[in-house]
Image (cartoon, rainbow over the protein chains, first blue to last red):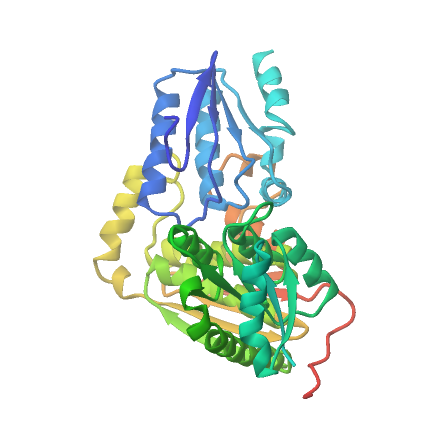
Length: 120
Length: 305
């Protein structure tokens, strides 16, 4: 899925790295939704153990994307998997903390930090 | 007298373009040999309009237009195009250039194009001054369950907040996030009565239910009512839906650890984080969001000069 428009992803060892390409509005259309479904499907088929979402380009997002991430976290958590986010923008960081997900998900400043932590 | 900056790496073409404008005696002409030198000149002089070549060494015309869009958004740019640069010109126009003149038609068209673009720019500046005198703005909308209109409304309300100098650009996105949450609640949970339990668990079922209810009564006939009031001190947004509402006193405690994994309630947390006040009426169908200006001093309306 390297050529995906909204959610390109690739696997490194047993970690799925998802790299959203821009902001994710609550009002995003069907096209965005179906591409996200492909990420969920990949994780559901347990082709990887952990998920890392690189948020560098996600300047903002809302509760809908938070719900999607939370569902992904729950799904992985049941099977000993972990969900991590990295490279949050300042506003992205505020959103995660306001929604209190910083208590639930792993957050790392860089992709390298996140990959190292997930591999350990 | 309007100051025009001509940007071209060819000294001959620079002088030619300047020479076409100077005889009128209506403009003061400045020159620069590429985009970087043009940006330096814009720092030194109060330039009213830029006329630029497209292909230049160093910073070219396209890059200059893009940079000016962020650093000098009020200064219009006219492109001088030559054969083979049409594609770049289209990109520059998309990037914000005001107009273009083919180099082979400079003699016939340059002066007139400069006058026309300056006239439009001047009207814009007067309008900006007028909006600077506005002390209050009130608007009301009645929307169907139309996502495109909701997106457009949010952008409009963000623009007014900037016009009223209530916040800086970085804060505008926060207002947008909070408004989006309020409007999405009104649309999906209020009017269409689709709960968030399915969201993330079974998205296909969620969206199928949304699509179904969009076309069946009573859901499809419900409206979203939005009132916004802007002053120089604060913005107040009231969003109401026609759904059955809920008991606001039963909202989950956001600090309760068991609420962490629930699907619902995140939107309200974001609204509260990015607005100064958020309150529901007793029916739960109407939410009021207040955003106050951050700095202590309230800007005075611009003088009518």
